[in-house]
Length: 212
Image (cartoon, rainbow, N blue to C red; front, side, top):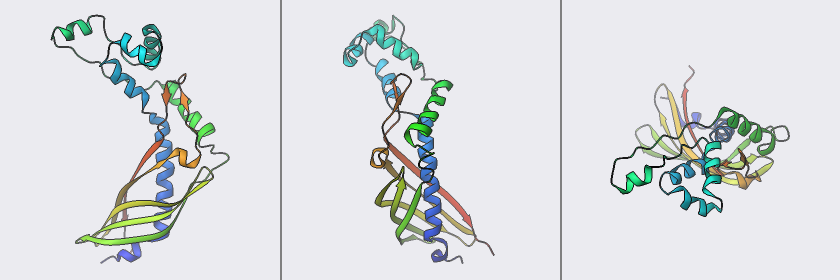
């Protein structure tokens, strides 16, 4: 039987979590979900002239913003048909334009993460605890210091579950970080209409096999 004490080491978790944080930060830069999704939902739930007042612009101006973000607009008869109780369909939200994705990647690399100035993300675990959850299953808690963008946040908690078999181990879990905690400025692209979310949800699912 593979020893859990031999598998769950600080070195293993330090390497794994540092890699996962870096990957999840970069992944968030390419998704840029947030206000675009919210605006799409509002456009299809509130008349354009009413929604425009919320943002302090004209309905024509709001329509231009929607076209820039490739948010599908409603036809003229949509609200009339909906009020009449007729069946109406909703166009799906398309993916972000390729040029906007490239702008997001450049912004994240050069202005947000500043990878030339801060090329490394480091996690150092200070405490690892395990409790049995069942046959071959353990609940794991890792507490450590995360250095990102030149800022170190202490006592970062990461919870996960470890499953051990005669062949190896599987560890999975999730945690969240806020970019503002690491003095990473909030940025927007596409003329200020696309914003990168502050909170990053990071998850990991790792499979390790024993070496005999």
